[in-house]
Length: 120
Image (tube, rainbow, N blue to C red; front, side, top):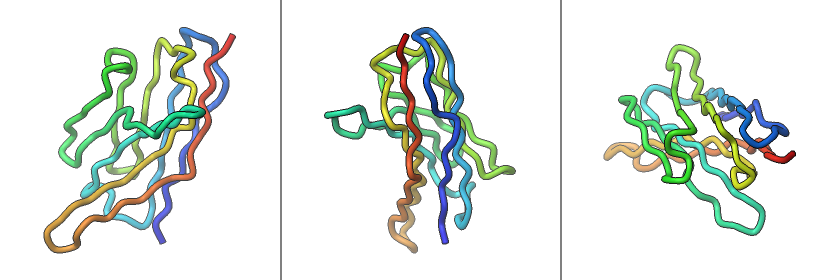
């Protein structure tokens, strides 16, 4: 079965850094777009960063210049490097794998989430 397992969350002071990892199994990883979503308390889940199967990246405006998403297809892993963290980055971060094809339709998988707390 498909599994997405996130790690790397935790408590960090404002201005600090964290690197999240998500290891995927049960999918053809290189064929999927990989995304990091986040959900803060009382807010809707939002897309923080995404990387397509060909390596094209996109970021929500609030994290541009601070977060970097990358992928290692040989390790079936997507990373989110988060620098200059702010209190408003506090959220549960979810890994998402998405593939849309004419033949298979849409396949969409989620990890269990990892908590990131930015606080002094």
